Length: 439
Image 1 (spheres, rainbow, N blue to C red):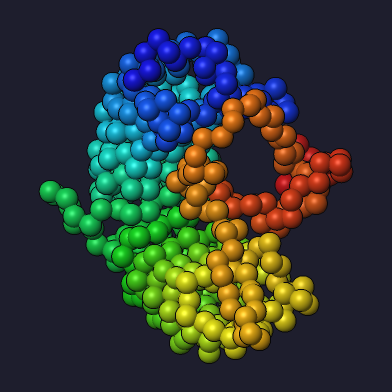
Image 2 (cartoon, rainbow, N blue to C red):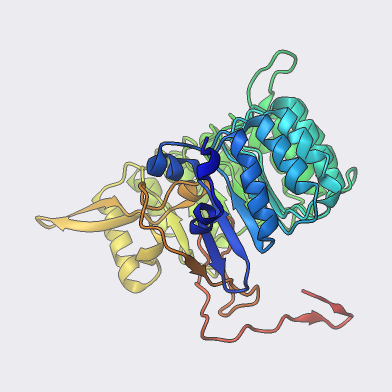
């Protein structure tokens, strides 16, 4: 703990100023530990709450990888959340918080203004999932909830499903949810991947407000993908499907490719590390030309030259590929020659690919090009891995209608193309039948 050293001036040094007058307070545990050898503890939460009450312009609080615990959450709720506040984004990743801490936040759910709540890495278990479902039931502002690696079992998952399904629940605001790495077993419940996949599909069928679904590392196999597609094929609004690091292999990707032929609204597909081989790559190449997919992540699979050539031949389509990640596949010069040609012709863009080509003695090789920062942003990794010189940062808040129009804009993925702040924002297009509602 910091104790009295956690002063107002200390916290002001870790504040970022936004162009609209708001602030972001970042007290990342790893950064603080490298600077001072200490992390935020439960005894430091009182000083933080007093700072937040003095500076109501702070709308985002990042406390990832500290040691707050349930006692710290009690202080945070009693001294801050129970009062009128403007907090919109709260990051509590990896803070040793249990279901008791989540229950305390749930008590204030009816007055919360939070748009995003990150609880990843806290072992809240099935009981914590029940309290999260109650929170979603009471609040009308949450748009992003991260429950990855929280030791949640299928019981807690089912409680949340009952709230966000539009045919049963009451929550109509959730846009992004992360169910990565549910635990396989617990004392009273065993995770059945088929049951999980079937419920995910049923949820997508009747939840048109959900735009991003993250379900990595849940042991989904090819038959589970088939069950999930029964309901998911009826969905017309999902834009990003992240089911990487499962084990559905060629069979699962072939089923997904057949779904892509039906021209869903899907813009981003992450199937990294799922055991896909040449057969699955060829099946995917048959579905891609009919889809709207602009973001494709097939890293760390088993796709060789033959399969990669099939995918490369299907990229040039009515909806061009913007982000294309292929690192970790056993490809060589035949595929790299085609990639080199596509880079020169502009079909692919080097800044949005995770490999870079180079030539040695006339032979083309490839190296890793660190442009895919999805995992770094998701796990709140420091930008440089070590503390940098402290200075007050000033961030420009992007207008939701900034020009040029965003073709890709997902959580933890870059906006493509980037906003041009020299251009005035384009006014929203309003529905003539309902002028008060802008599309």
